[in-house]
Length: 245
Image (cartoon, rainbow, N blue to C red):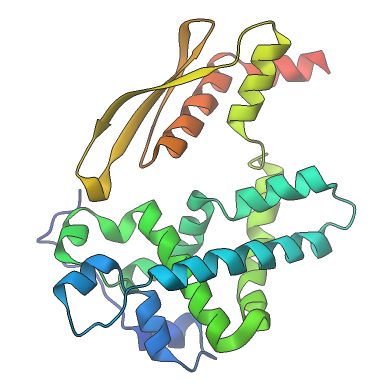
């Protein structure tokens, strides 16, 4: 948890626009995209939070990323395109984009979120990035979003392919288990901790009745994925696949 006495470097919506969105004309729209509901609760002069823009940005991202992949990889089959899109719009990847852009210091959060380390929380960074995309779409239309995303997608896609980040560890673990005659992996939540706005989940994965991996995350989905990845490493499944090819 961040020390609430430590002052975070902050950036106004106008300063953020000048730095990363020089062609954006509606700064009030960008300001809304940066406003978390916790800030709204403490600042009634802020009329709307970013949740509606987040909803819009999520839909825009799915379309733009899907179209980008279709054109970027003309020989890639549908299944691989789907996995790539999932990897590019996953919470962790969108939070990485947000961190690369320095969105954290421009986010408008309430005191509770600040004290809980909200400037660095993956979920908040992801949500803010989606909201900014929604605002950019309203201000610059789909072409403006495409131009903004293109260099980030290029770099991230190369990294995903190079490091096999498009592979879903849960699917991979299940295929290995079934291929070796075991029942499907079973995921159980060992513990849940933290306040409602900053929960942490710990999940174990069992194969044939034995714990083979554990994961911790800010959501059950993230913790489950981490547990599957840990099991893959423990069971040397990547090595097994290589020798069986």
